[in-house]
Length: 352
Image 1: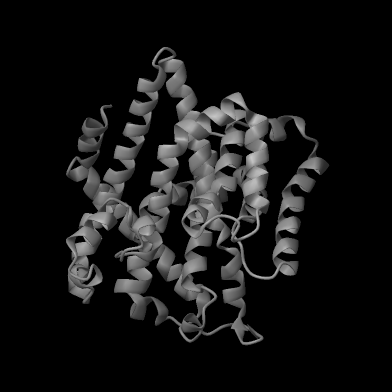
Image 2: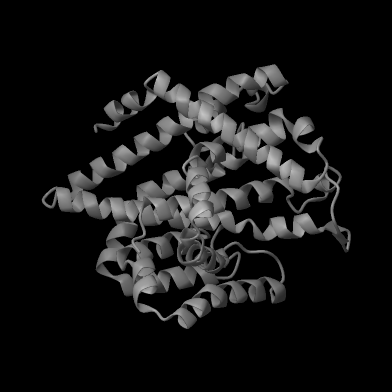
């Protein structure tokens, strides 16, 4: 079974569901009073314990982005085998423009909208135009300046990944053994090994390199075609067990090992969920809206609609309302984008 756009969207849909739970019931005391928990363990709601592990959604998105970009890079190389460095620059430029245009579409709608909810962008940016420009160009995470949306740190990381793509892609193509070693190194390296600013990038290189390696060797298809069922079961469970053991016995919290848990979830999506007709269609549909929902969901549940979302008190209801609201907004935004022909402008600017 080919790992195509449908499979990717199923995985993105799963990652989005985890993302929403992670943010709605995050393991922080300021969240505990916003909902009625089914059970409290040592003063911490069960939903918040689950939310901690749902943070794996970030590793899932990095893995899937790297997988998709590597496959796209391969196609680009086949179309233009003599292009060399110029072809790589054009490839990165096209993807950077598409990324920023999608982001700016959300930014130009939701940031001014904050005035209606008492969230004034000139106050967030402390009256500094430069802070606003950093945020507008997805740089605020690296410049450590105020951002309208705390979740937009991921945009800074994806921007950095796109710029590193030629180097990481070449490494994965020419020296896959080195790429494997690097993925394991960045997964297991102790926290604090790198300076803080460098660590902001290196801590996510494990899922990024893993995604590229899976794309390089068509690992999903090979596992589905050649690996016996009982071995597939081990591949599904062993990484997850290793991940939970790591978090159980290691003091402190590190996201580097999330690449292992992400691998279990991705294999589960591919080997199990994608074979359930109705569920896979729903997940693939939801996954198709994962990009814009990621970009605006924090505005909905935290900045603009917090009293409404948490008014429902019970976690399942809060979650269902949040998911439904995000999907409705995403569908409306896509319709508006077609109406104003925004995609045409994006293609023109990216040189497609």
